[in-house]
Length: 242
Image 1 (cartoon, rainbow, N blue to C red):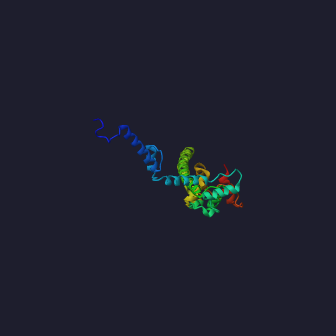
Image 2 (image 1 turned 120 degrees about the horizontal axis):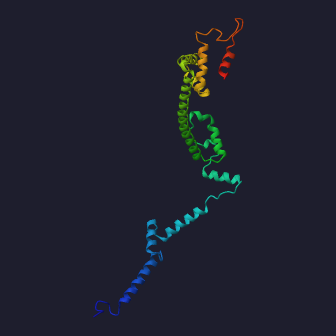
Image 3 (image 1 turned 60 degrees about the vertical axis):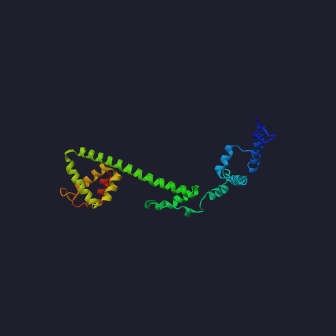
């Protein structure tokens, strides 16, 4: 009765053995051999359908590693030049595609030559210059803000030093500026940056006072009528007598 549903002479252990044999046979026929389910899943995810595809991928990987660029020995300039050439170093500075700002065009060629000489690749050279331009802009803004603060402080210091004569001296200073620079704001800006606000105020106040209607033709100098006024010496003394 126990073997009513089984083929004659076949037992449960026989069925199990047959199942194991069939599974092993299927594995061997698949071409992958003895692989775990995890390994088979990994291969499937990579897209390898046959062992031949896997072997081809491995050989290409091996070939890639065998053809890697070898690092040259120290001091081997010829080998280094060859290496950098393979990495994309141009033969001359024309290979550097960098758009220089107007104020940098004069030194642009020198910058590219320096990059070429020091084996800085074109893309890296462009990145360095872009960083420099951005950093310069930020530093310029910072320095300008600091200069304005310093200028305002020096102006207030000069007013306190002049005391009750501050308004009068400022009017003389403005007159001196107009006469000396002919209302050229750029020239005044350059002078103030070079000398500082306080000294600029002092100089142009003296100049405005010397050229005011209240002063004699001699510009305040004690000279005889026969003496000729040397304006060059006068202005040189005015700008350096401190």
